[in-house]
View 1 (cartoon, one colour):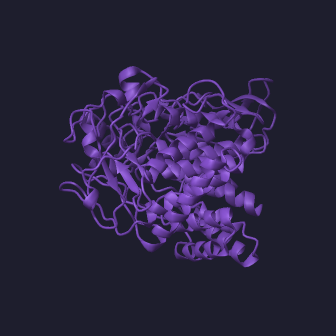
View 2 (cartoon, one colour):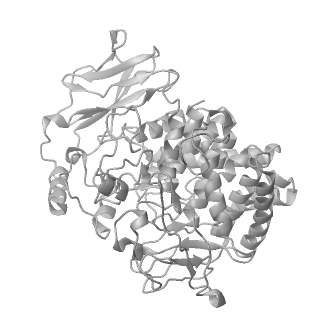
View 3 (cartoon, rainbow, N blue to C red):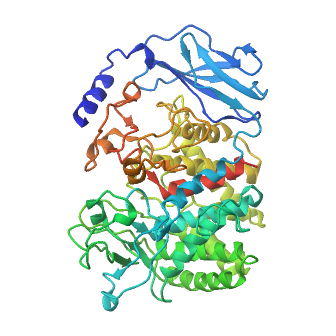
Length: 586
C-alpha cells in the first residue's frame, strides 16, 4: 500500500488530469458564528469554472450569491482555488454552498454552534489516563518505575503511577504533560463559567462539584507531584521507545525492560547533558525547559485550587518556588530520551518556559523580582521561533504558544505592555506573511502541524482580546476553520467531533484499532511535508488513500492507522484546544 500511495502522489505532482469529483467546496463543518468572517474554499480540479457559487439557507429556503469570490494561488494539484466570502449570511439555520454540481457539506450559522464542544477534548484526556483508566474501567502500569541514568539513585524504585499516556503509545513525558496541565488550568482561569461537571475525579460519570477540566488538570498535577519525589529530583520521562514492540491495550502492556514482562518501566530524571540508554542520545544542555514547566504548572495550580483545596494548593506553591530556583540555576533545554530509534522531542528553547514560570510566580506571590525575571526572559525570545519559519525539527520550539507573553501584554506598566503586545503581533505577522494561499495557512507542515494551528488560534485570539485589534481576525478564523474541515482534505481534525461530516475514522490508536473504541476528542497530528512522511520509520498505508485527489507533492494527510505521522491523536495537542474552544463557548 505504501508503494501505491507514492505512485498516486507522483501522478498528481505530474499534473495528470484529476477525476471530475475532485472538485470540492471546503467549509468549517461545525459552522459559523453570525459575527464571523465566513469563508468557504472552492477547489477546482480542471479549467476554472465560470459558474457563480450560491449559498442556500436550508431552514428558510432562501438562496443568494456570495458577497465576493476571490481568486487565489492554486493549491496543487488543483487548477484553481477561490475564497468564497459570505459574511452577510447571519440568519440562524442550516446552510449549504453549491457551484454547479459541486456542493459543500451542510453547516450551521448560529450563536450556539460551539456550545458544549469545549468538553469534547476532555473525553480524550480521560481515555489517555494511566494508572486507573475510566474509559476501560481497568488499571495499567501499576509498577512504575525504576530510576535509570540517575547517578547514585539508579536502580531505585519510585512511585510515578498516574498521568496520561502521551499519544497512542504508552510513554509519558513531563514535557507534554506539564504543558497540558497548564493549558487546561489557563483555559479554566480565562473562562471559568463555561465548564461542566459531569464526571467525578476518577473520570467516571457523575459530578463531584468540581469542573471536569479541573478534575483532569488535578489528575496531572498529582502525577507531577509524584514526578517530583524529593526537592532535588525532578523526573522527565517514564518508559522509552522500546514500548513500540507491542501495540495492545494499556493493561496488556507486557514489554520487559529488564525487570519482568509487564513490570517496572524505566524512569528518567531530568538531565542537563545528552543522554540515552543505547545508541541514540538526545541533545540536552540544561534543566530549565522541564523544571521550569514544573514551576509554572505548580504555580498556576496553586492559584486555581487555592479556594477549592487550600492544603493541595499550599503544597503546589511550595513546590513551584523550589522548582523555579532549580530551573533558574540550570539554564538550557532538557530533552526526552530515545533508546532504539532516533525520535525524541527535540525541544531547543527554554527561556519561554522560564518566562512563563516567572510571571506565574509573580501572579501568585506579588514579588516583583519574578516580574523582572519574566520580562528579561521574554526579551530573549520575543517571537516563538516556528512562527514564520518554513520548517523545524520535531517539537523543536515548544510549547508552540508562549502563554507568558499574554500575561506581560496585560502588565500595568504601559511600556512593558506595549513591548509584549508588539511581540505577539510580530509573531502573527510572520505567519500571515507565509499564508499566501486559499486557506490563508502559513503554518510549517512539520510533524504535529495541527498543534501549531491551535497555537496560532490561541495567540491570535488572546492578542485580539487584549488589544481590541482585529487585523488578524481572518488569519485566526481561517486557522480555526482549517481544524474543522476548511482544508484541502475536507477533514475535521478532531476524532468524533459532533456535528461534522468527516473526521478521522482510522486514527493511529490501539483503542480504536483493537477494540473499536472511538478516541473521541483527540486532535490528530495533521498534514506533514511529503518528505517527512516518506522518511519516517514504519509509516505506510494499509488501505487505499481516500484523499488521493487532494494530495500534492509537498504536503500530505492520510486517514489511515498506519500513518502515525498525520493521523495519531496526541494528548498535549488535544489539551491545547481547551482555551480556544472555551472562549468560543461563551
